[in-house]
Image (cartoon, rainbow, N blue to C red; front, side, top):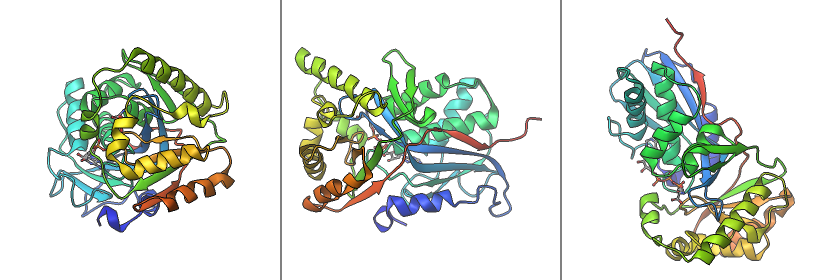
Length: 324
Ligand SMILES: Nc1ncnc2c1ncn2[C@@H]1O[C@H](COP(=O)(O)OP(=O)(O)O)[C@@H](O)[C@H]1O
Ligand SMILES: N[C@@H](CCOP(=O)(O)O)C(=O)O
C-alpha cells in the first residue's frame, strides 16, 4: 500500500479495527501501545503549542519474528524494517535510560499518520517506541522522561508533548509542558495535500534571528490562540497568524500557502500544521465546513479534507506483560 492509494480517513478506520490480541505466525502479543497524531505550532506557537488528534498509530510487540519492525498502513513498504527504525531506536533509548537489557521482540506498527505531512508521524513513532519500552522493561512513570527522550530524538517538544498527554499543550523552554482540554465546541479539520515536506528541511529554511517587534507580536497571538483553543475566549482567525516560521515555509509550499490565505480571508482560524504541508482549520460550527471545502476546491493540487476530533487520552498502553 502506498500513501497515494489510501486516504488518512480510511486507513484510520483500518487501524482502529486491528485485533491487537491476535497472534501472528504463532507469535503472541507481549505489549501494545497507541499514540495519536498531532498538529504542532498552531500558527504563532512555533515549537511550543500542539494538539492531539484522533488519527492513531498502534505499536504491537510480539515474540521475535523475521524482522525487527514491520510497518502496516501508511509508511508500509518505505520505512526501515531493521534496528534503524525510529520506533525501535526509541525502545532502545528507553532501555538505555533505565539501564535495562533491550528485549528481543519484534514490533508491528499500524499507522494512519501520513509521513512528512505535518501530522507528527515521527513524534508518534518516537513516543510509541518509548512507551513500548517502558511497558516492556519498566522504569519511571509520569511524562518527564518520555518527553525528554522524545525531544532528543525529535529536536523539538511540541508534537511529542501532545502525543504523550493528548489535548492541547504549551511546552516550556526549560522542559515540561502544561496541558488543557481543548474546547469541545471546536472541530479540527485537517487539509492534507498529497505532497510531502520533510520537517528537517522545513526547519532549515527558517531565519536564525527575527526583529523584537515580530517576536513580541507573535507572542501576543500565541497567547490569544492558546486561550481560544482552550475555550476561554473566541478563537480569532487573526490570532493564528504567524510571522516566524509560516512565511518562509509557505513560500516553498504553494498549495498550503493558498489554503492558509484562503481560509483566513474567509474568516476561518487556520495555520500550517507543524512544518506542513497540511493545514489545520478550526470550526466553531460544523456548518462552516463549506467555507473550507470552497477554499480547497479553489486551490491547485489534490487535498484530503479530514474532519477530525480531539484526542484527549494521549499515549496509552493497551496491553503490558504481567509483572513476574
Ligand atoms: N511509523 C513509523 N515508523 C518508523 N519511523 C517513522 C514512522 N513514521 C514516521 N517515521 C519517521 O519519521 C519521518 C518523518 O518525520 P518528519 O519529516 O518529521 O515528518 P512528520 O511531519 O510526519 O513528523 C519518516 O521519514 C521516518 O523516518
Ligand atoms: N515545531 C515543529 C513541528 C514539526 O511538526 P511536524 O508534524 O511537521 O513534524 C516545526 O515547526 O518544525
